[in-house]
Amino acid sequence: MSAFKISERVSYIGVNDRATYRFEGMWPIPKGVSYNSYLVNGSEKSAIIDGVELQHAYEQIDEIKEILGGKAPDYLIINHMEPDHSGTIRALRHAFPGITIVGNAQTLAMVKGFYGEEGATLAVKDGETLDLGGATLKFVLTPMVHWPETMMTYLEEEKTLFAGDAFGCFGALNGAVLDSELELAPYMSEMVRYYSNIVGKYGQFVQRALAKLKDTEIATICSTHGPVWRDNIPKVVEVYDTLSSYQPLDNGVTVVFGSMYGNTTRMVEAIVEALAAGGVRNIEVFNAGQAEMSDMLAAAFRHRGLVIASPTYSDGIFPPVAAFVDALAVRGLRNRELVVAGSFTWAPQAAKKILERLEGCGMTLAATPFTVKQNPSAEALEVARESGKALAEALAR
Ligand code: FEO
Image (cartoon, rainbow, N blue to C red; front, side):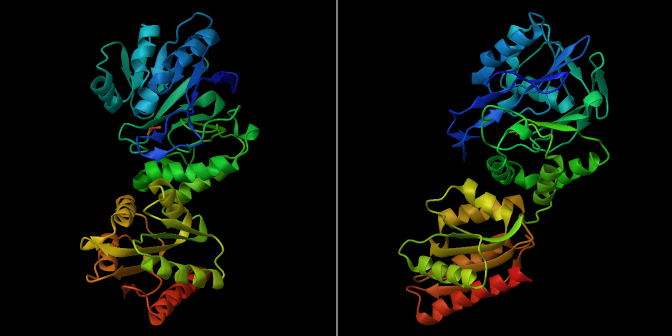
């Protein structure tokens, strides 16, 4: 996309990726993704903050040359080394041989490990500053948001926080970069999907970063993905605070199930009908054998209620449901009202193993877990309905 001037000193020089099918090789991005990059101009020097993904290198280099009118940028500041932002390091060095790569000690070790670069580098520590001439960049180390080397860069004169992946979302930028110039609902939804998929395991570190920035005045947040936040900063900070403290965003219910012959599906329908009858309106139901893990995780992070239903398969949890349960456990999702249901033909294992995997996660059982043999009887369907009713009542409290 074109370069956008977002303030006196800062230009947006990021790119849209509308071609990649799965981000990190896993997460679908049907609406694309933006790799945000920024050029900060001081009266004496200039700095690129974060690069873009490799295949977009020349698009970005052309924009930098146009903005700087033939001058070369002095610094490339790497807030985050994941290759969607660092992939252009070699290309930028080739285009601008005098450029100095700026990062903390872990960043610079990774630069060498990923790209074998031997050129000029500048190691910075937490709280140090770099003066570009009337543009002072302060470095704030925020490890594990999302990798161990992650840091943020704060432009003091404009109170602008270059936040790395934090406050980012999937979705290419449709013609503008400022939040005031975009329809926000799709990006806010994609923020939950991005967070739950990619950063979700690191809630405690996000909380630490938010606490560290608590007294920093912030007028603009420049994330590495999605809109530049200016008019909606309290809202996005609140969403991030809620997600990273593993609190739900709403009182809806996520239902994830697997079914081979329809028996688990019948139980799930009974649970869902009871939920609706109990007043729950926001119910998302996923057949794990067909649904994207990405969407199931986003729903689980969003809603307070969670139903997991699985047949026994090879003496364990039905594999697509097992993958979802494992993804929850890895992320340590907690503070959810949980219903667990199993079905089986000869070995009642699934419900027991779901509970074992989630043990210690800090979820509350809204109903007694139950297991149904083969085709659910009228009595078994009544038990399923009772569990849905109990979940609806728990959510109403
Ligand atoms: Fe957008 Fe963790 O990289």
